[in-house]
Amino acid sequence: MEHIVQEVTVLILPIIFAITLHEAAHGYVARHFGDATAYLQGRVSLNPIRHIDPFGTVILPLGMLILSSVTGGGAFLFGWAKPVPVNFGNLRNPKRDMLWVALAGPAMNLLMALLWAAFLKGQLAFGMTEPFFQDMADAGIKINLIIMLLNLVPILPLDGGRIVVSLLPPRLAWRFSQLEPYGMVILLVLLFSTVLTNVLAPFISISYYAIRMLFNI
Image 1: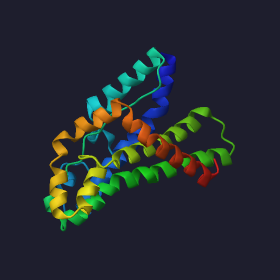
Image 2: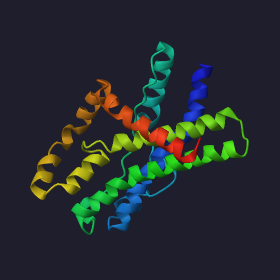
Image 3: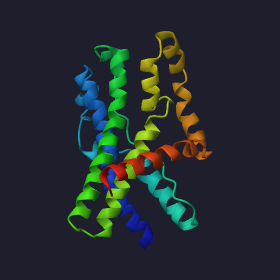
């Protein structure tokens, strides 16, 4: 039990920042391009409570962490935050601006991964040897890279799916958008069959080690 508590305390801040700023970025960019839906609902906010889904953000990931610790299996975490509402019809140029709204979340996660790496570099540069904060910074890099790459998978309603819709010609974009009702089922099947994990793992590893090399950490 003590091991689980330690893991949770290391992961909690990186996860909260990762989901909060990811969702807030979507809302901020949507407002910039003409859709104030998220802003009017108070979702362009750094307050994590506004973005947390009780089951998807807290209960499910914590339950999976406890289960993996009890069974001795590899740690497999999955969850989600409340998606920021975006009315793409309100955007000044819906098809074009959808691209920037969708990219905003993953871009924010990349920025946070770099900031966590800078935090770790600062600790090493100033001789701080507290393992807790080093583990937290390392977790911050990994969590943000995982969220960024997972969201770039070209399946609706993920950000990658929105990007595909934005880039495809109108007729193909419409056909692709018809798959959205089945998107979460497809995603869950790919995740729990480990197909998606196996596909993303090399990209996560390459990105992680590239950032460590960039900061020499």
